[in-house]
Amino acid sequence: MKAVIQRVTSAEVKVDGKILGSINDGFLILLGVVEGDTETEAKLLSDKIAKMRIFSDENDKMNLSLLDFQNNEEPHKVLVISQFTLCANTRKGNRPDFFGAAKPCVAEPLYHRFMNNLREDFGLSVEEGEFGADMKVSLTNDGPVTIIIDTDDLKK
Image (cartoon, rainbow, N blue to C red; front, side):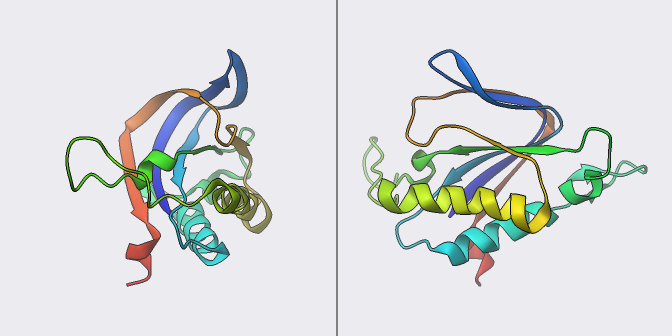
């Protein structure tokens, strides 16, 4: 699995002009499911992201995770967007191929498993896009802070 995590002060996703998901402070996560991914990668990635300390503490050091804000009046949230284009192969030519992306029948359940792990294992509030839809995503990146994670790198 591949993820682009953006620390945001706001983010939303629309399909056909209707808002499907919207958050204030938290993470916008673009999630790509790679051929060969399983629930193991979904768990590995959700655990890593939930505990990732990229929010500033009182000393302006990136020391806090999503979990540190759960008891706030407005806890930090997550918006997860499926994005097979993260699996692009750009080695040859100028037109990327997406053969490395998992087929929808595999990717969609893993997309939902990833989000459910964040909800069930960590009690996080998770908004989502619509798998396979043409989505319009808008955000205000905070920092900007953008982190890229590939589960292949986490296994080394």
